[in-house]
Amino acid sequence: MGGRSYAAHPAPLTEVGALLEARSIHPGRTAYHHLRALAHTHGIPGARVEHVLGLTGLTDVAHRRVKGFSLGMGQRLGIAAALLGDPATLILDEPVNGLDPEGVLWIRTLLKSLAAEGRTVLVSSHLMSEMALTAEHLVIIGRGRLLTDTTVTDFVRDSGAGTVKVVTPQASDLARLLTAPGVDITTDTPGTLQVRGTDAQHIGRTAAAHGIPLHELTPNAASLEEAFMDLTRDAVEYPATLAGATA
Image (cartoon, one colour):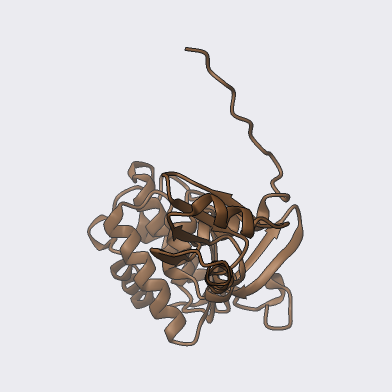
């Protein structure tokens, strides 16, 4: 980090704040004394301890023993510890784990505000819906291999996981004309096609060239989750299978 290993920094908490396992705290300590002990090792003033307790909403429980904390409270304490040294870089693993809806909104807003200050905020998570609302840049790793390194916007746009909804009275004719390698066509209701693997422009041109009327031609962008699943389909380490049930 910053050109040297973490252990080589004279005051690493002021360089990198990390949340890896929020509950790795002595259960007999209070939240205040846990943070105060960390601060003492780095010469961080007590006022900073009070500040991060307030920032994470723990002021009222600061003198309660950690063993009585809920999962969400423990998560907030872990985030407070990561912020204690006012670091330029934050590394947070599943920071919303255990938080209620208000807490999820709070951590999302906090992370965005920290990034807006010019800090580097690295978040690892499997919650695609939350990452879609929080992250600006993605690094996706599967089985130890880098799969992509790009912006969220570009990743979703270029994933190919989106579909195009087509409504036409000649659905079967158009489906036949659009059939090609890499193009997947499904239908839920008569006269409606969901086309994946080609774009609306190609579909429109094909329909026009063959005199097929279109009542609707609507591109549906992929969600981050859909794009992620499409990319990592062959990189799942522990694929699950669905067992069939007999009524």
